[in-house]
Length: 231
Image (cartoon, rainbow, N blue to C red; front, top):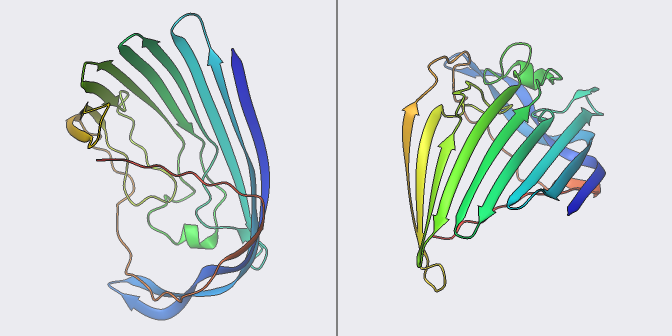
């Protein structure tokens, strides 16, 4: 059994909120105001597959890529993420579940001037990464147990534009009760076995700048991703 989707989109952006550098500084950091003065576009694609392999094995894979350009400034848009993909191999048999997840992100070197001025983004761009995760679970009469092993390779990485690095190698346990009736009660705990100690990019929060109330106008096709957690 196999299924897959592929989507291409092109979004035009009008009156985009952009930062404007002022002459002021706080603790050595530049202060910015924001205004709706920029036009641009974002285009890219999303692809995913779902393949039922032999017996209880199922393969899921997805990838996405974005290209953003400021027409007003004739440069890349800020904070555009690089190519990203996830490959997951799932095992499900009766009450037992398990999965292996491999996350991969390419290096982002296509930077706007605002990215180059941002100390959360390394000089020259954000390096790519590969992260490996494992999970296993069991469904009991009224309790679901899920054990998740984060970042088994203890990779030292951060998502493009983030102010902090991802956590190092860690284990989390989730207990979900009252599966078949409301209210549902979720309990989770996380134990860090070993955190990455290399921090090549200091996580410094910039002083906040004034923000104007405005509306972002768009045209074209777009997509959004959302999640919901019940506790």
